[in-house]
Image (cartoon, each protein chain N blue to C red):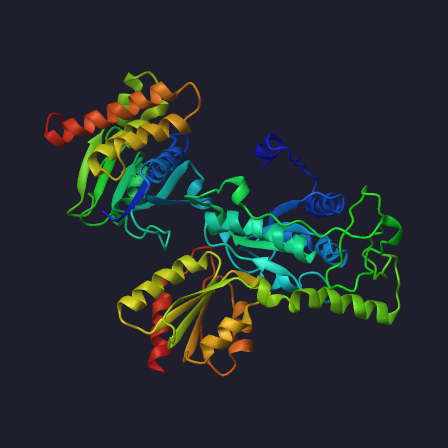
Length: 186
Length: 338
Protein backbone atom coordinates (compact mmCIF):
# COMPACT_ATOMS: atom_id res chain seq x y z
CA UNK A 1 0.00 0.00 0.00
CA UNK A 2 1.77 3.19 -1.08
CA UNK A 3 -0.43 5.59 0.86
CA UNK A 4 -2.34 4.50 3.95
CA UNK A 5 -4.59 6.88 5.82
CA UNK A 6 -5.03 6.03 9.49
CA UNK A 7 -7.36 7.52 12.08
CA UNK A 8 -7.10 6.56 15.75
CA UNK A 9 -9.87 7.91 17.96
CA UNK A 10 -11.12 7.50 21.48
CA UNK A 11 -11.29 9.68 24.56
CA UNK A 12 -8.74 11.73 26.44
CA UNK A 13 -6.45 9.71 28.70
CA UNK A 14 -6.31 6.60 26.49
CA UNK A 15 -3.05 7.69 24.93
CA UNK A 16 -4.56 8.18 21.47
CA UNK A 17 -2.08 10.92 20.48
CA UNK A 18 0.87 8.88 21.76
CA UNK A 19 -0.33 5.84 19.79
CA UNK A 20 -0.41 7.94 16.62
CA UNK A 21 2.98 9.44 17.37
CA UNK A 22 4.56 6.02 17.94
CA UNK A 23 3.02 4.66 14.74
CA UNK A 24 4.39 7.57 12.71
CA UNK A 25 7.74 7.38 14.48
CA UNK A 26 8.04 3.66 13.70
CA UNK A 27 7.15 4.25 10.05
CA UNK A 28 9.62 7.09 9.49
CA UNK A 29 12.57 6.37 11.74
CA UNK A 30 12.68 2.57 11.69
CA UNK A 31 10.83 1.52 8.52
CA UNK A 32 12.24 4.46 6.51
CA UNK A 33 8.88 5.37 5.08
CA UNK A 34 7.26 8.78 5.13
CA UNK A 35 4.56 9.72 7.60
CA UNK A 36 2.70 12.84 8.60
CA UNK A 37 0.63 13.28 11.73
CA UNK A 38 -1.75 16.17 12.14
CA UNK A 39 -2.93 17.10 15.56
CA UNK A 40 -6.17 18.94 15.80
CA UNK A 41 -7.18 21.03 18.71
CA UNK A 42 -10.38 22.97 19.19
CA UNK A 43 -13.92 21.74 19.74
CA UNK A 44 -13.31 18.14 18.63
CA UNK A 45 -10.45 17.79 21.13
CA UNK A 46 -12.56 18.95 24.06
CA UNK A 47 -15.27 17.14 25.99
CA UNK A 48 -13.08 14.10 26.33
CA UNK A 49 -12.79 13.22 22.65
CA UNK A 50 -9.34 12.56 21.21
CA UNK A 51 -8.35 11.85 17.62
CA UNK A 52 -5.18 11.66 15.62
CA UNK A 53 -4.77 11.38 11.86
CA UNK A 54 -1.78 9.89 10.11
CA UNK A 55 -0.74 9.22 6.57
CA UNK A 56 1.96 6.63 5.99
CA UNK A 57 3.48 6.24 2.56
CA UNK A 58 6.45 4.85 0.71
CA UNK A 59 6.31 8.00 -1.41
CA UNK A 60 6.52 11.67 -0.55
CA UNK A 61 3.31 12.85 1.09
CA UNK A 62 1.82 15.93 -0.53
CA UNK A 63 -1.61 16.69 0.94
CA UNK A 64 -1.36 15.82 4.66
CA UNK A 65 -5.09 15.57 5.35
CA UNK A 66 -6.90 12.26 5.73
CA UNK A 67 -9.74 12.14 3.22
CA UNK A 68 -11.03 8.57 3.53
CA UNK A 69 -9.29 6.47 6.18
CA UNK A 70 -8.03 3.06 5.05
CA UNK A 71 -7.66 2.16 8.70
CA UNK A 72 -9.87 3.34 11.55
CA UNK A 73 -9.10 2.40 15.14
CA UNK A 74 -11.81 3.34 17.64
CA UNK A 75 -11.71 3.11 21.39
CA UNK A 76 -14.92 4.91 22.33
CA UNK A 77 -18.56 4.82 21.26
CA UNK A 78 -18.54 8.53 20.54
CA UNK A 79 -15.56 8.14 18.21
CA UNK A 80 -17.32 5.25 16.46
CA UNK A 81 -20.48 7.28 15.98
CA UNK A 82 -18.51 10.19 14.61
CA UNK A 83 -16.10 8.43 12.25
CA UNK A 84 -17.43 4.97 11.30
CA UNK A 85 -19.13 6.14 8.10
CA UNK A 86 -15.92 7.70 6.78
CA UNK A 87 -13.90 4.48 6.40
CA UNK A 88 -13.03 3.52 2.84
CA UNK A 89 -15.33 0.79 1.54
CA UNK A 90 -12.57 -1.85 1.46
CA UNK A 91 -10.97 -0.40 4.59
CA UNK A 92 -10.22 -1.82 8.01
CA UNK A 93 -12.03 -1.03 11.23
CA UNK A 94 -10.51 -2.10 14.54
CA UNK A 95 -12.57 -1.58 17.69
CA UNK A 96 -12.17 -2.16 21.37
CA UNK A 97 -15.12 -4.53 21.60
CA UNK A 98 -15.85 -3.74 25.25
CA UNK A 99 -16.10 -0.02 24.55
CA UNK A 100 -17.72 0.05 21.13
CA UNK A 101 -21.03 -1.33 19.94
CA UNK A 102 -21.30 -1.52 16.14
CA UNK A 103 -24.56 0.40 15.81
CA UNK A 104 -25.19 1.76 13.29
CA UNK A 105 -23.26 -0.83 11.29
CA UNK A 106 -20.08 0.19 9.42
CA UNK A 107 -20.22 0.70 5.64
CA UNK A 108 -20.44 -2.52 3.59
CA UNK A 109 -17.10 -3.97 2.53
CA UNK A 110 -15.28 -2.78 5.63
CA UNK A 111 -13.36 -5.52 7.47
CA UNK A 112 -14.11 -5.34 11.17
CA UNK A 113 -11.78 -6.64 13.87
CA UNK A 114 -12.94 -6.76 17.49
CA UNK A 115 -10.11 -6.58 19.99
CA UNK A 116 -10.73 -6.49 23.76
CA UNK A 117 -7.82 -4.09 24.16
CA UNK A 118 -8.73 -2.63 27.52
CA UNK A 119 -9.47 -6.09 28.95
CA UNK A 120 -6.12 -7.43 27.69
CA UNK A 121 -4.38 -4.39 29.17
CA UNK A 122 -6.09 -4.88 32.51
CA UNK A 123 -4.95 -8.52 32.55
CA UNK A 124 -1.40 -7.21 32.14
CA UNK A 125 -1.97 -5.01 35.18
CA UNK A 126 -2.50 -1.53 33.67
CA UNK A 127 -5.47 -0.44 31.57
CA UNK A 128 -3.40 2.55 30.41
CA UNK A 129 -1.54 0.32 27.93
CA UNK A 130 -4.70 -0.52 25.98
CA UNK A 131 -3.38 1.86 23.29
CA UNK A 132 -0.33 -0.40 22.84
CA UNK A 133 -2.58 -3.46 22.59
CA UNK A 134 -4.45 -1.66 19.80
CA UNK A 135 -1.18 -0.78 18.07
CA UNK A 136 -0.21 -4.46 18.21
CA UNK A 137 -3.49 -5.45 16.61
CA UNK A 138 -3.21 -2.71 13.99
CA UNK A 139 0.32 -3.84 13.16
CA UNK A 140 -0.65 -7.51 12.77
CA UNK A 141 -3.82 -6.84 10.77
CA UNK A 142 -2.74 -4.04 8.43
CA UNK A 143 1.06 -4.59 8.19
CA UNK A 144 1.33 -0.86 7.57
CA UNK A 145 4.42 -0.81 9.80
CA UNK A 146 6.68 -3.75 10.69
CA UNK A 147 6.45 -5.19 14.22
CA UNK A 148 10.20 -4.66 14.67
CA UNK A 149 9.89 -0.95 13.87
CA UNK A 150 6.93 -0.67 16.25
CA UNK A 151 8.83 -2.25 19.12
CA UNK A 152 11.84 0.01 18.55
CA UNK A 153 9.58 3.05 18.46
CA UNK A 154 7.73 2.03 21.62
CA UNK A 155 11.00 1.48 23.47
CA UNK A 156 12.28 4.92 22.56
CA UNK A 157 9.05 6.92 23.00
CA UNK A 158 7.24 5.65 26.11
CA UNK A 159 8.16 6.98 29.57
CA UNK A 160 11.34 5.49 31.03
CA UNK A 161 10.73 2.43 33.14
CA UNK A 162 7.51 1.48 31.32
CA UNK A 163 9.13 0.02 28.20
CA UNK A 164 8.69 -3.60 29.20
CA UNK A 165 5.01 -3.26 30.06
CA UNK A 166 4.30 -1.37 26.85
CA UNK A 167 6.12 -3.94 24.71
CA UNK A 168 4.25 -6.73 26.48
CA UNK A 169 0.96 -5.00 25.71
CA UNK A 170 1.96 -4.49 22.08
CA UNK A 171 2.84 -8.18 21.72
CA UNK A 172 -0.39 -9.24 23.43
CA UNK A 173 -2.38 -7.20 20.93
CA UNK A 174 -0.31 -8.52 18.04
CA UNK A 175 -0.76 -12.15 19.09
CA UNK A 176 -4.46 -11.72 19.72
CA UNK A 177 -4.95 -10.29 16.23
CA UNK A 178 -3.01 -13.16 14.63
CA UNK A 179 -5.26 -15.67 16.41
CA UNK A 180 -8.30 -13.63 15.48
CA UNK A 181 -7.36 -13.71 11.81
CA UNK A 182 -6.76 -17.48 12.00
CA UNK A 183 -10.23 -17.88 13.49
CA UNK A 184 -8.85 -19.19 16.78
CA UNK A 185 -10.75 -16.56 18.77
CA UNK A 186 -13.88 -14.57 18.01
CA UNK B 1 13.05 25.07 23.47
CA UNK B 2 12.77 25.88 27.17
CA UNK B 3 14.14 22.42 27.89
CA UNK B 4 16.60 22.05 25.03
CA UNK B 5 18.27 25.48 24.91
CA UNK B 6 19.92 25.29 28.37
CA UNK B 7 21.22 21.82 27.45
CA UNK B 8 23.17 23.25 24.51
CA UNK B 9 24.50 26.39 26.16
CA UNK B 10 21.61 28.65 25.26
CA UNK B 11 19.34 30.75 27.42
CA UNK B 12 15.56 30.61 27.47
CA UNK B 13 13.68 33.45 29.14
CA UNK B 14 9.96 33.50 29.82
CA UNK B 15 8.94 37.17 29.67
CA UNK B 16 5.77 38.73 30.99
CA UNK B 17 4.31 39.53 27.56
CA UNK B 18 5.00 39.85 23.85
CA UNK B 19 6.21 43.44 24.06
CA UNK B 20 8.85 42.52 26.58
CA UNK B 21 9.80 39.37 24.67
CA UNK B 22 10.82 41.19 21.51
CA UNK B 23 12.53 43.99 23.46
CA UNK B 24 14.66 41.40 25.26
CA UNK B 25 15.46 39.73 21.93
CA UNK B 26 16.67 43.10 20.60
CA UNK B 27 18.80 43.64 23.71
CA UNK B 28 20.28 40.14 23.50
CA UNK B 29 21.16 40.66 19.86
CA UNK B 30 22.74 44.05 20.54
CA UNK B 31 24.84 42.29 23.18
CA UNK B 32 26.06 39.86 20.53
CA UNK B 33 23.74 36.86 20.90
CA UNK B 34 21.55 35.32 18.26
CA UNK B 35 18.04 35.66 19.59
CA UNK B 36 14.52 34.82 18.58
CA UNK B 37 10.96 34.78 19.85
CA UNK B 38 7.75 33.13 18.71
CA UNK B 39 4.12 34.13 18.84
CA UNK B 40 0.74 33.83 17.16
CA UNK B 41 -2.18 36.08 16.28
CA UNK B 42 -2.67 38.97 18.73
CA UNK B 43 0.89 38.41 20.01
CA UNK B 44 2.18 39.39 16.58
CA UNK B 45 0.11 42.59 16.68
CA UNK B 46 1.54 43.38 20.11
CA UNK B 47 5.06 43.01 18.74
CA UNK B 48 4.66 45.54 15.94
CA UNK B 49 6.12 48.48 17.89
CA UNK B 50 9.20 46.44 18.83
CA UNK B 51 9.49 45.11 15.29
CA UNK B 52 9.81 48.74 14.18
CA UNK B 53 12.50 49.29 16.79
CA UNK B 54 14.48 46.28 15.50
CA UNK B 55 14.15 47.60 11.94
CA UNK B 56 15.20 51.13 12.87
CA UNK B 57 18.14 49.99 15.00
CA UNK B 58 19.05 47.37 12.35
CA UNK B 59 19.13 44.63 14.97
CA UNK B 60 19.44 41.07 13.60
CA UNK B 61 16.77 38.82 15.14
CA UNK B 62 14.17 36.21 14.24
CA UNK B 63 10.46 36.31 14.95
CA UNK B 64 8.30 33.25 14.37
CA UNK B 65 4.64 34.03 13.79
CA UNK B 66 2.27 31.09 13.58
CA UNK B 67 -0.65 32.59 11.72
CA UNK B 68 -4.14 31.78 12.95
CA UNK B 69 -7.57 33.13 12.18
CA UNK B 70 -7.97 36.82 13.08
CA UNK B 71 -8.43 39.71 13.61
CA UNK B 72 -8.31 39.86 17.41
CA UNK B 73 -8.50 36.55 19.30
CA UNK B 74 -10.10 35.08 16.18
CA UNK B 75 -9.51 31.36 15.81
CA UNK B 76 -6.83 30.16 18.21
CA UNK B 77 -5.58 26.70 17.10
CA UNK B 78 -6.89 27.16 13.55
CA UNK B 79 -4.79 28.04 10.54
CA UNK B 80 -4.80 31.14 8.36
CA UNK B 81 -2.41 33.18 6.27
CA UNK B 82 -3.96 36.46 7.28
CA UNK B 83 -0.79 38.19 8.53
CA UNK B 84 1.17 38.35 5.27
CA UNK B 85 0.58 42.06 4.74
CA UNK B 86 1.00 42.74 8.45
CA UNK B 87 4.45 41.16 8.26
CA UNK B 88 5.29 43.67 5.53
CA UNK B 89 3.48 46.77 6.75
CA UNK B 90 2.58 46.15 10.40
CA UNK B 91 4.98 48.63 11.99
CA UNK B 92 4.57 52.30 11.15
CA UNK B 93 6.93 54.03 8.77
CA UNK B 94 8.75 52.96 5.63
CA UNK B 95 10.88 49.84 5.66
CA UNK B 96 11.57 46.56 3.97
CA UNK B 97 11.46 43.19 5.67
CA UNK B 98 12.30 39.54 5.01
CA UNK B 99 9.72 36.82 5.66
CA UNK B 100 9.95 33.08 4.97
CA UNK B 101 6.93 30.76 4.77
CA UNK B 102 7.52 27.05 5.57
CA UNK B 103 5.23 24.28 4.31
CA UNK B 104 6.64 21.34 6.31
CA UNK B 105 8.45 20.67 9.60
CA UNK B 106 11.66 20.19 7.57
CA UNK B 107 11.27 23.62 6.00
CA UNK B 108 10.39 25.09 9.39
CA UNK B 109 13.76 23.85 10.66
CA UNK B 110 15.70 24.89 7.55
CA UNK B 111 14.06 28.30 7.20
CA UNK B 112 14.65 29.20 10.84
CA UNK B 113 18.38 28.73 10.29
CA UNK B 114 18.12 30.65 7.02
CA UNK B 115 16.20 33.40 8.83
CA UNK B 116 19.08 33.85 11.27
CA UNK B 117 21.59 33.93 8.41
CA UNK B 118 19.58 36.51 6.50
CA UNK B 119 19.03 38.64 9.59
CA UNK B 120 22.75 38.64 10.35
CA UNK B 121 23.64 39.41 6.74
CA UNK B 122 21.19 42.27 6.26
CA UNK B 123 20.83 43.51 9.86
CA UNK B 124 17.08 43.20 9.71
CA UNK B 125 14.51 41.25 11.74
CA UNK B 126 13.44 38.20 9.75
CA UNK B 127 9.99 36.71 10.18
CA UNK B 128 9.31 33.00 9.88
CA UNK B 129 5.73 33.25 8.72
CA UNK B 130 4.24 29.88 9.52
CA UNK B 131 0.66 28.86 10.18
CA UNK B 132 -1.15 26.53 12.53
CA UNK B 133 -1.27 23.62 10.04
CA UNK B 134 2.49 23.42 9.64
CA UNK B 135 3.02 24.18 13.33
CA UNK B 136 0.89 21.21 14.44
CA UNK B 137 2.29 18.92 11.76
CA UNK B 138 4.58 16.05 12.73
CA UNK B 139 6.79 14.68 9.98
CA UNK B 140 10.29 13.40 9.33
CA UNK B 141 12.96 16.06 9.82
CA UNK B 142 16.55 15.45 8.82
CA UNK B 143 18.95 17.44 10.97
CA UNK B 144 22.36 17.62 9.32
CA UNK B 145 25.59 17.36 11.30
CA UNK B 146 26.48 20.69 12.89
CA UNK B 147 29.48 21.28 10.64
CA UNK B 148 27.30 20.94 7.55
CA UNK B 149 24.96 23.72 8.62
CA UNK B 150 25.78 27.08 7.09
CA UNK B 151 25.92 29.70 9.84
CA UNK B 152 26.37 33.38 9.00
CA UNK B 153 27.27 36.00 11.58
CA UNK B 154 27.08 39.77 11.40
CA UNK B 155 29.99 41.70 9.97
CA UNK B 156 32.16 43.26 12.67
CA UNK B 157 33.92 46.63 12.36
CA UNK B 158 37.44 46.44 10.93
CA UNK B 159 38.48 49.80 12.42
CA UNK B 160 39.75 50.39 15.97
CA UNK B 161 37.18 51.63 18.54
CA UNK B 162 38.30 55.29 18.33
CA UNK B 163 37.54 55.38 14.57
CA UNK B 164 34.23 53.50 14.73
CA UNK B 165 31.02 55.19 13.71
CA UNK B 166 28.05 52.84 14.14
CA UNK B 167 26.26 54.12 11.03
CA UNK B 168 29.16 55.92 9.37
CA UNK B 169 29.88 53.27 6.79
CA UNK B 170 29.27 53.96 3.11
CA UNK B 171 28.02 50.39 2.80
CA UNK B 172 24.30 49.65 2.72
CA UNK B 173 24.75 47.29 5.66
CA UNK B 174 27.04 48.84 8.28
CA UNK B 175 29.38 46.58 10.27
CA UNK B 176 27.96 46.05 13.74
CA UNK B 177 29.84 46.38 17.02
CA UNK B 178 28.06 44.83 19.95
CA UNK B 179 27.70 46.11 23.47
CA UNK B 180 30.67 45.21 25.62
CA UNK B 181 33.13 44.77 22.77
CA UNK B 182 34.96 48.02 23.53
CA UNK B 183 33.26 50.11 20.88
CA UNK B 184 31.12 53.13 21.59
CA UNK B 185 27.58 52.20 20.65
CA UNK B 186 24.44 54.32 20.81
CA UNK B 187 21.11 52.72 20.02
CA UNK B 188 17.87 54.63 19.51
CA UNK B 189 14.59 54.27 17.69
CA UNK B 190 14.78 57.95 16.81
CA UNK B 191 16.17 58.94 13.43
CA UNK B 192 19.92 58.89 14.00
CA UNK B 193 23.13 60.11 12.43
CA UNK B 194 26.33 58.19 11.74
CA UNK B 195 27.21 58.17 15.46
CA UNK B 196 23.85 56.70 16.31
CA UNK B 197 22.72 59.91 18.01
CA UNK B 198 19.24 61.35 17.45
CA UNK B 199 19.13 63.78 14.53
CA UNK B 200 15.82 65.10 13.27
CA UNK B 201 17.03 66.75 10.11
CA UNK B 202 15.25 65.85 6.91
CA UNK B 203 18.26 64.72 4.92
CA UNK B 204 19.49 62.43 7.73
CA UNK B 205 16.06 60.82 7.91
CA UNK B 206 15.77 60.48 4.15
CA UNK B 207 19.23 58.94 3.84
CA UNK B 208 18.59 56.49 6.70
CA UNK B 209 15.21 55.32 5.44
CA UNK B 210 16.38 54.88 1.85
CA UNK B 211 19.33 52.89 3.10
CA UNK B 212 17.28 50.51 5.28
CA UNK B 213 14.93 49.99 2.32
CA UNK B 214 17.63 49.68 -0.32
CA UNK B 215 19.73 47.19 1.61
CA UNK B 216 16.86 44.77 1.02
CA UNK B 217 15.61 46.03 -2.36
CA UNK B 218 18.98 46.05 -4.07
CA UNK B 219 19.75 42.58 -2.72
CA UNK B 220 16.28 41.17 -3.38
CA UNK B 221 17.43 38.75 -6.09
CA UNK B 222 19.96 37.27 -3.67
CA UNK B 223 17.34 36.96 -0.92
CA UNK B 224 14.52 35.46 -2.99
CA UNK B 225 13.81 31.82 -2.50
CA UNK B 226 11.26 30.07 -4.69
CA UNK B 227 10.75 26.94 -6.74
CA UNK B 228 9.12 26.57 -10.13
CA UNK B 229 7.72 23.07 -10.52
CA UNK B 230 6.40 21.66 -13.79
CA UNK B 231 6.17 22.73 -17.43
CA UNK B 232 8.70 25.17 -18.74
CA UNK B 233 6.14 27.00 -20.82
CA UNK B 234 2.96 26.47 -18.81
CA UNK B 235 -0.40 27.83 -19.83
CA UNK B 236 -1.50 28.14 -16.22
CA UNK B 237 0.56 28.64 -13.08
CA UNK B 238 -0.42 28.06 -9.45
CA UNK B 239 1.11 30.57 -7.03
CA UNK B 240 1.25 29.42 -3.42
CA UNK B 241 3.29 29.58 -0.19
CA UNK B 242 3.29 28.08 3.29
CA UNK B 243 1.20 25.05 4.18
CA UNK B 244 -1.33 25.82 1.41
CA UNK B 245 1.42 24.46 -0.85
CA UNK B 246 0.51 20.98 0.40
CA UNK B 247 -2.95 21.35 -1.16
CA UNK B 248 -1.64 23.04 -4.29
CA UNK B 249 0.96 20.38 -5.07
CA UNK B 250 -1.78 17.74 -4.91
CA UNK B 251 -3.92 19.75 -7.35
CA UNK B 252 -0.87 20.28 -9.56
CA UNK B 253 -0.19 16.53 -9.73
CA UNK B 254 -3.84 15.81 -10.58
CA UNK B 255 -3.75 18.46 -13.31
CA UNK B 256 -0.59 16.99 -14.82
CA UNK B 257 -2.19 13.54 -14.74
CA UNK B 258 -5.01 15.00 -16.82
CA UNK B 259 -2.42 16.32 -19.27
CA UNK B 260 -2.97 19.98 -18.43
CA UNK B 261 -0.19 22.49 -19.10
CA UNK B 262 0.40 23.75 -15.60
CA UNK B 263 3.29 24.87 -13.41
CA UNK B 264 3.52 25.72 -9.74
CA UNK B 265 5.39 28.67 -8.30
CA UNK B 266 6.18 27.94 -4.67
CA UNK B 267 7.12 31.18 -2.97
CA UNK B 268 9.46 30.66 -0.03
CA UNK B 269 10.38 34.28 0.72
CA UNK B 270 7.04 36.05 0.69
CA UNK B 271 9.02 39.24 1.47
CA UNK B 272 10.78 40.53 -0.50
CA UNK B 273 8.24 39.25 -3.02
CA UNK B 274 10.01 37.33 -5.82
CA UNK B 275 8.89 39.25 -8.87
CA UNK B 276 11.19 37.77 -11.46
CA UNK B 277 9.84 34.21 -11.67
CA UNK B 278 6.33 35.62 -11.88
CA UNK B 279 7.31 37.97 -14.72
CA UNK B 280 9.01 35.10 -16.53
CA UNK B 281 6.00 32.82 -16.12
CA UNK B 282 3.59 35.54 -17.24
CA UNK B 283 5.23 35.45 -20.69
CA UNK B 284 3.74 32.03 -21.39
CA UNK B 285 1.05 31.56 -18.76
CA UNK B 286 -2.45 32.51 -19.84
CA UNK B 287 -3.24 32.93 -16.22
CA UNK B 288 -2.37 32.43 -12.59
CA UNK B 289 -4.21 30.66 -9.80
CA UNK B 290 -3.31 32.20 -6.45
CA UNK B 291 -4.05 29.98 -3.44
CA UNK B 292 -4.12 31.56 0.01
CA UNK B 293 -5.73 31.06 3.39
CA UNK B 294 -6.96 34.65 3.51
CA UNK B 295 -9.12 37.04 1.49
CA UNK B 296 -6.37 37.94 -0.97
CA UNK B 297 -2.99 39.30 0.17
CA UNK B 298 -0.28 37.83 -2.09
CA UNK B 299 -3.06 37.99 -4.70
CA UNK B 300 -2.44 41.74 -4.86
CA UNK B 301 1.27 41.21 -5.40
CA UNK B 302 0.55 38.80 -8.24
CA UNK B 303 -1.90 41.24 -9.81
CA UNK B 304 0.69 44.01 -9.45
CA UNK B 305 3.48 42.01 -11.06
CA UNK B 306 1.61 39.90 -13.59
CA UNK B 307 -0.40 42.88 -14.77
CA UNK B 308 -2.59 41.90 -17.68
CA UNK B 309 -2.63 38.13 -17.02
CA UNK B 310 -5.82 36.48 -15.91
CA UNK B 311 -5.64 35.86 -12.15
CA UNK B 312 -7.98 33.40 -10.43
CA UNK B 313 -8.10 33.23 -6.66
CA UNK B 314 -8.69 30.30 -4.32
CA UNK B 315 -9.46 31.66 -0.87
CA UNK B 316 -9.61 29.39 2.16
CA UNK B 317 -10.89 30.78 5.42
CA UNK B 318 -11.95 28.91 8.54
CA UNK B 319 -8.85 27.04 9.57
CA UNK B 320 -8.49 24.11 7.20
CA UNK B 321 -6.11 23.65 4.30
CA UNK B 322 -7.59 24.53 0.89
CA UNK B 323 -9.36 21.64 -0.84
CA UNK B 324 -7.20 20.48 -3.78
CA UNK B 325 -10.36 19.93 -5.86
CA UNK B 326 -11.23 23.62 -5.64
CA UNK B 327 -7.77 24.50 -6.96
CA UNK B 328 -8.17 22.04 -9.83
CA UNK B 329 -11.48 23.66 -10.79
CA UNK B 330 -9.77 27.06 -11.03
CA UNK B 331 -6.92 25.60 -13.12
CA UNK B 332 -9.48 24.27 -15.59
CA UNK B 333 -11.23 27.64 -15.63
CA UNK B 334 -8.00 29.46 -16.53
CA UNK B 335 -7.24 26.94 -19.28
CA UNK B 336 -10.80 27.01 -20.68
CA UNK B 337 -10.49 30.76 -21.15
CA UNK B 338 -7.04 30.47 -22.68
